[in-house]
Image (cartoon, rainbow, N blue to C red; front, side, top):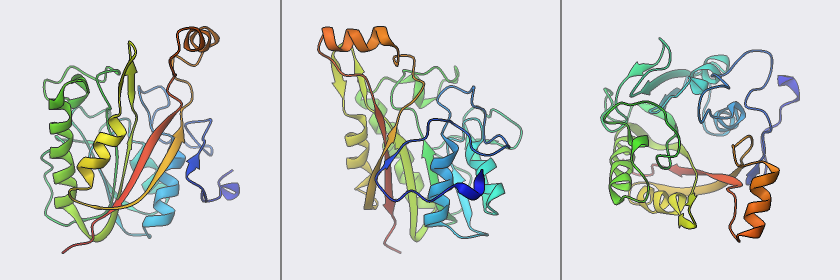
Length: 227
């Protein structure tokens, strides 16, 4: 199957399956698991073989698996490691030297909608309705700027929240944070699949009560353009 994969050419990416090929990339049963072809596409565009890729919130290890298959060096961190090759660390304070990363990918919580773990410092336990949530994302953004090499790229996957008819534009708020440190490159829309609200009854409720179900996430791509 891998021979038939093509690099995405538009700003709308739609991956119906979490995985590609015959080997697992991460765990497709993990809450909020990243579609593997997102990382594969980013590696083709923004890295070369031998580059060091950092994932500060590695989840089930999708980034690690794709990077190893594509001959990239990779270090994955998580506040509660899911497996042995993920290093325990907080994305706001990574044990890395300045300007070490050739590329950074992060798939972060966008509120407290998914229960990842009970760690007291887990950002995913803070609601995006609380401004503290964005203060913590700002700390992550500063750390990304610190470890990223000049003129190299990063990509951040995040979604918005609409809950009880209250909409929080989490993606836009994050974008404004990242602009403080990095140069905008582009924004990709990632089609969402398999969320619990993607059922007939929820679609009927959305029409009846005049609200929208979340249909996409943002993939924000930026570049560090200063030494």
